[in-house]
Image (tube, rainbow, N blue to C red):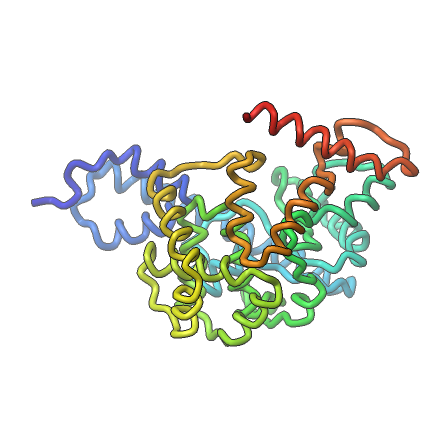
Length: 356
């Protein structure tokens, strides 16, 4: 009996694309599923080849930008994107992505913008100089458009927006960077320990809604030589041990990843890890989504923090940290910028009332 019989292929391919695993699915089905219909095989082959072409362009652009930033003596560390595909998955074609991410020290942001401008990239959003200074303090990234499209490059001076209350200094990540190769060129990238933590934080920010974010963690555990004592020590210092545990649980139960003993201990010492892991796995199976400005999302983020102080810090910063929409909603002169906190509170309160 053909094990592929009864599959609704259009729905299957749409689901694989939604979860960011279409290149992985395409390669494995084309190699190991000879019973595919000609039409499905063509669709998979087309998706795979299109991803290769796009990824090759991104890899070349990453190398070009990294080379230019290095020539300007700007310490910037690319991560995710082509480097994740090449170094973690072992094949540039096996992961899709839509932009290039560079970590940069806040003090180097302006020089980084100037260097990107020399390569034809311009900020996706134009800010007044005083707003630019304000955003450097309260924001976490700037997106850039290029000749090939919009939102192609991001310079990030924080891993997460400030209100998540995870204060992982970018300068330390940059200092601990190691060397990797992309397209035959050596570039800096995150250490394996920092990469694992950053991927866990990224998954938690999005509540692990897409399979690719769990796959990234699973493949990092599988392919990288990681000092887990260092990972756990840094997670405890940041108050994100539960996030690390849920990430491990999902990698183990969704991707059947073999975990080191210390990861098993993290899972077993916090009863909330298994409960939250099962919750997110069930929602993943249903392809459920979240409203990232809903009270339900905020409550789940709070449950992911094991320390009460971090929960209160998250709530405080959430209420008082202005975002881009708050800055755009009203124009204030620089001496009155503290009032943007009141704008934030008012807009957030109105949204909460609409959701009740």
